[in-house]
Length: 185
Image 1 (cartoon, rainbow, N blue to C red):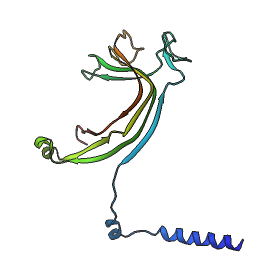
Image 2 (spheres, helix red, strand yellow):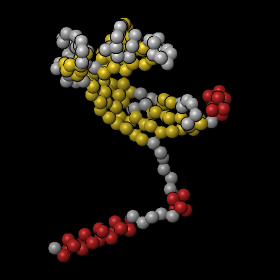
Image 3 (cartoon, rainbow, N blue to C red):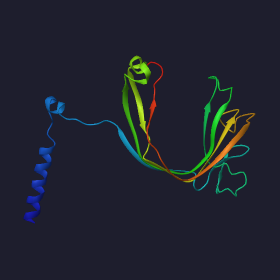
Image 4 (tube, helix red, strand yellow):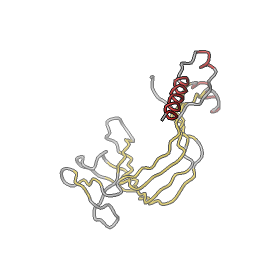
């Protein structure tokens, strides 16, 4: 019992010493690197999902390919024309399956040189997305389409499916994606 109390008091005194504030000069000597390193696993509608029918959404219990009229995946719609959304939509539809990745990084980067002289004129920060070391797909499928509106429930909805993609496997990626801001912050 006495040994346990002495050990606990020793631990508490060491912890208290480690939490002392640092001076501005000491902080100036610390070097580090900003950014975020992410790994993850994302599954979209593995066991069913919403199915739009006449009226409100209904739940589709099975999303396998044998299910009639099963549109169970997520939908991403991007307006490809005017701001009013009346000139057409590029659509990734019926997205489902499992995506897992390791090594996606996010950080800011200053662009002030390069790019055939345009970097010096830009002289601002961008978001740098470092592509993941590996990206695994398991039973992933999606449909690439164009559409008359963002939602299938909108009036006079029409969609032309261009192709459907089914993926299983792994991809090894290299490089960075730079996201440039627009407008004035």
